Image (tube, rainbow, N blue to C red; front, side, top):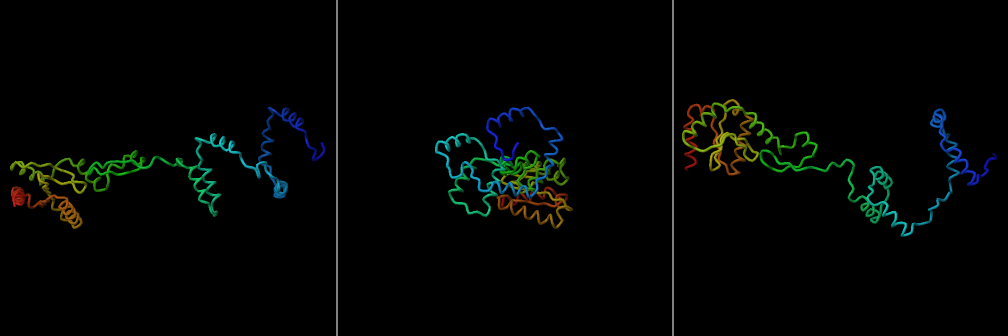
Length: 259
């Protein structure tokens, strides 16, 4: 066959029919994969393609053709790869407002493949405040509390198995004087109080060792201040005072209430 001889369409069809069902051998496939195209060959291919005009160059789609393309594309989402290509192609270029509007309309309503539905609302088990956390945290068992303080209060409520001896002395005296009370009550995520009496009265029974430490003294003062501004009256009694006379401690509370 002579070089540059053009084959007729009929001849091409015959060759195509003859090759139907034929497959390359594994050896041929390996050779094709490992075939190296030299820079010279690449340059020749590039030169040969220069100046070629595509069949759509200088033409435009008719309104009917555009409508058909629009109908066919409905319901299709732009892939992340396509979005990335658009983004890269626009880098360093000035995009008109009209183009921005078209891109915005194209991507409207679409969500990234990484989208997991956003944060979900949870309610703190202690102070009942609302908090928004990611679903993955809820799945792991987190997001039950709005703060570390509420988490600590919850642990204290459920881990405490018995009352201290000074709490028992205060409770006995409250019963003797027929005073209504509740034990171990969480107050608005601020503190877990030992006893809550009617009219927002709080009694705290403080052990000598723990509550004598400087850091805990500061924490107690801060708690009492916040509770005061929330409308509570806090009475703190040390271990020494309670063991000496629990009755005097309760009488002091009653006397201050009546004043």
